[in-house]
Length: 201
Image (tube, rainbow, N blue to C red; front, side, top):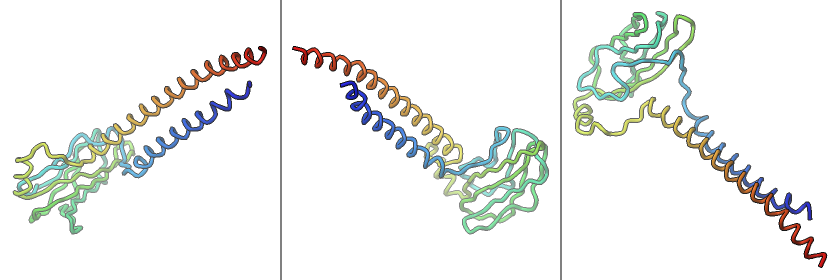
């Protein structure tokens, strides 16, 4: 009779561990497949045009402001959907600010800014941002200022919230399984004593 409580608890423990592993793997796969930007010194303070901006006319330059001074060997590209780079020459570095002129004649459409820089202490940083040029795009943004935009910051926030939710779920599963395990330990010995008393009658 002493082996029955352990035998009864084993399947429950195996199922609980299996559930925890399944949840952890399900949460880890999208996080593992997510882009991995390089962060250093808090990355960037701001970028102009802002990520997701809808501009009525083309900007004359792009500015990225970092959290600390950067080296002059920085690069910026401003690519349209055809793969054309609209960055006009080499960027200028002024302390923590990276300034990239934009070639004239930029047509309406969507663009992606990509930058790479190195802080003066040697740490690298890289990032991307997107914006749209065109009166129609600006009018649509003004008519619906609350429309959802999938930006880099939003993606990071989403995965952070997902990680917190997964940790909370795992904690809840472990708490429930511990309660079931404790209740089982309390009930099995009592049941065993009853059977032994019945057998002596």
